[in-house]
Length: 257
Image 1 (cartoon, rainbow, N blue to C red):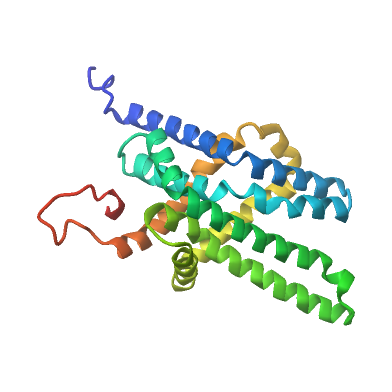
Image 2 (cartoon, rainbow, N blue to C red):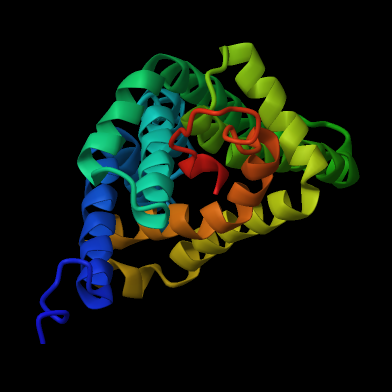
């Protein structure tokens, strides 16, 4: 009977992990409130067909709202892998440690990707108004911009996990995210498809999602990071190896497990 009430009991361990995931999702959502507000408002613009002008004005503000997304997402991924999967440390401490360490590079990379995303979306939306080559040329131009957007998404799925694990300059972060995206194309496609699937679910089932809007920030961020970690971690394990292998001193190799 005493084993049942032990803090090491599987039941209590599982409950603790669920609570940590809810808390980490909440922390991520609070840190990303500017982006969540902008995306939600843009979504309403699309659903209510309020016109292109208002949509473009909001879209131009998107990069500013992205500033905290990079460090927040890197911190979330770091805390999910270390706290939930490897059971090392405390969720809050791990999250804010990674947030602080990665804030500068994460914020700058978020601005860059936010601007790039905005430019691509604006180009796709405005192409029919400024292309004089007919419907065929317009379709080709849209296809080119869409291809650029997909390529950007492929790189983006690796950026924040990379930032959470390695000390990189901005140039190294962007370069290595592109390299990993190409070298691990099937894993990249899986993660990109996962994000696209979530976006489509919001678009097609938005009427039902509104009823659960309060629950989404408490569940989706951490669950998404946890699912993606099973795709990403095998790659990181190959990169990092085991630091104990060539050293007599035992170190905390949670990231190599």
